[in-house]
Length: 393
Ligand SMILES: [Zn+2]
Image (cartoon, rainbow, N blue to C red; front, top):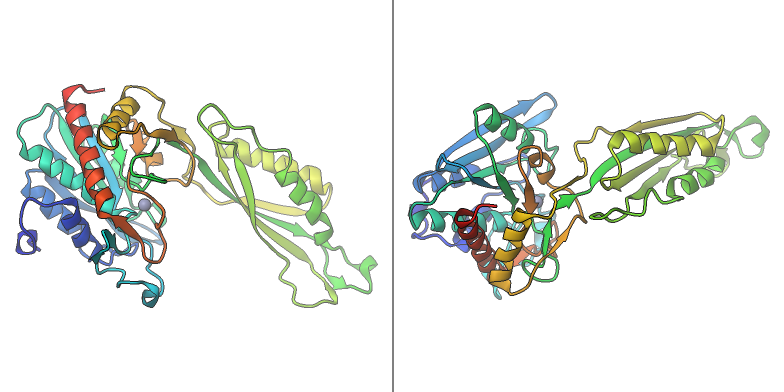
């Protein structure tokens, strides 16, 4: 597709975001979103290529790598064009892939998470490179696999780029991090995530003959108490306390006169930098063993690629905070709360921050971004580029 057939230059973040929303790129479908971005960046002088990765048991995923310039320092923007499903389109005020503009808002799936943020970064970069020479490079790492299994996305794209000799000095992920107002929150780290599955085994029988059975639900109380108390930790300098939530308890038993043979629990822990997944798993195993004594249990943990990380406060966090303050007049707070993002993978290659639009409507019906915030975020990213290539951190 030639975007110039569709829209005049120069492109604003709104133009780009509307075009992106019109591609129904529900993970793992791309639907044209990444080729559109590739063409846009290539026309502006970026060296840009699409790379598809595969793995057994997961869908193939398209990714985009683009870079303008070859010199250091290299500031790279990262993000994703895939979106979560829209659900029942009839419940939306406007069709979810229409990119309707009404009441000062851009409506549609991905408006905030994160086609809007990506569009702001692309608009800022196109504007910046059009102004003339600068010392360094601007890159884009864009995946179509952030909302899915995250196997054929950023992890492999980074490996691919590093293997080709690409180097990154700093990265900004445009995920929606703002809470009350644009730029109020930058994420400089993320908690890790670990999911555990526990089965308490017993012996099925008639409720009238309990001596012939062994009800595993009798051990549920002590197990829950041991999982919840004492707290895993009291937090750390940059993180809230780690938190464990039991998300389901299931004995699979529809009959009131049957003692169930087993009960299954699933729990998820969002953990801070005091833990590795291995040490956390060992602590949980110890607690459960203490609660059930000799009774038989099966405990497994899902594989996780969500490890906690922190980008320490320093020149880079200061530069991005100052860019936000230039535009909004307010200094953002640095936070490590909330869910995880692809920043957890990029951390291995260079210091990384998440900074993007307000997140109030992400993954919801009637997802929408204020036009004012789209423009504001574009100005923030422009200020980041100006500051970065004037006084690199
Ligand atoms: Zn996202």
